[in-house]
Image 1 (tube, rainbow, N blue to C red):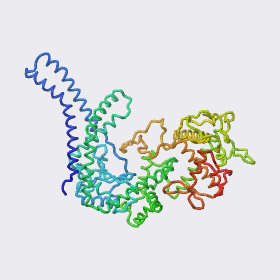
Image 2 (image 1 turned 180 degrees about the horizontal axis):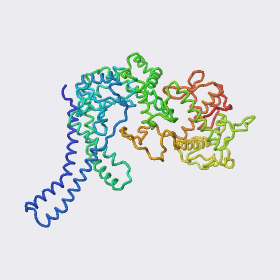
Image 3 (image 1 turned 30 degrees about the horizontal axis):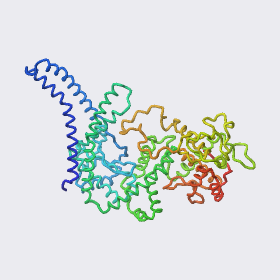
Image 4 (image 1 turned 90 degrees about the vertical axis):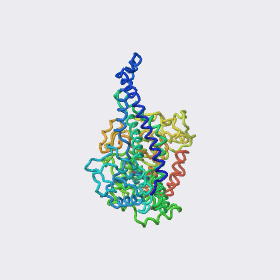
Length: 610
């Protein structure tokens, strides 16, 4: 194959980056060169006189300082560990067929094969250079280039980049589709092997790592001042290289795409559709299904298998995706792994760490959960914990039992208690409304004089925080309860747990084998913190579901696209959310009470909590 136009453009940009490196070196050496000339002139009796002597006395120490500073900056850039993506390594023994397919693709593309394969819990694939000494495994565990097959086991240079594959692709895509998607990625090893491109990339990665090192907090004022200078110089050089580095990567990508056109081009068009579908299903699985489990200390151990179920369900519901289900009869790409379940479990744990910040391994408060156990272990438990929290807050606010012909002597955890408290006929609360000093009309919340002695905060009629725009448009009882729930949940999350250190405690020393910073977890949070309005809706929905399970024979269920769901007579309920919002925003419980009556749910009966 000839040299692609993109590769030529990438090499030109690489040379531009290297010229910036050379200019920086020249600037560092310039004072030393002038000092050498002045000293040589003094030895040869040519540059004499008070002016030249003064210049020598001033410039020589300055040149030494500049050389020392340049050497220090170069040392930090060389030794700083470049960022490395968190991945699950896959050895050739664990996936011989996958390595064989990658090797065959590299041969057809006439490019070096990747040095190793790793999986990432995301819908993306890329090549990652891990040739920095900090990234190298111990000599006994050094991976061999999969293109060398053992003849070059002791060769250390050059080392091809690592191929990182999105784990959802392996479970959803068929073997041919995965091959078509990986072809342009693997083709990138060709331009990456060029010495100028590799040198330019190392220089840019070193500068980026040096900036990260300089940004780390330090107590020692001397080291903080020195590293601040290093960071300042590194940022200047990065800004100078930014355009050239971006165009370099763009050229490499164009060259790889051009070279890969000859391999499975027709199938790649279909495979790209699967990439978009996999991303949509993966995102919904994480945010709707995995996130509720993570929040309560459980992590689904088969996320990649779950994405197949989610996408199959999406194909069934979406008429535009009807043809995708027929692909399931072909060989899935996960068959290229020797033990797909083990790999899926490792990728699922890594996903929980990256997107939620969970611990590195199972523990008392961080245990795996199988999909078959999800409804009972996650959905039912989540609803009952939320319902228990809701009633704890009502107890702290002094809310009385539900009204009726024969009120109970004790405060029972009933749905009627919540409905009566939130039913409101007064005006909606608005942000900044500080005039609500007592319970609104129709509310069963007591006034300030009836609040329990252990209650803290403002009177029950005044929502806290009063300036929360999210609570605007809700009733006063809803705003008050939402604020109290938000504060209660914040206290629970701030409390230390056996699974993770408390925020106030110092972070443990990172594992030397871990090549990414565990202290910054989660690296990619899925969603911003839930608002007070959302928390109230979640807790009220949980209370309704608990009442349905305890009084009407309903059951917790799992919807692959929407997460926890309530099953009544085996059918999924989908019309509860609007009625809950009507109660929160308008204080009108009539639609919800009618819905409960139609399904035989008795709100006056106590429910089991916790």
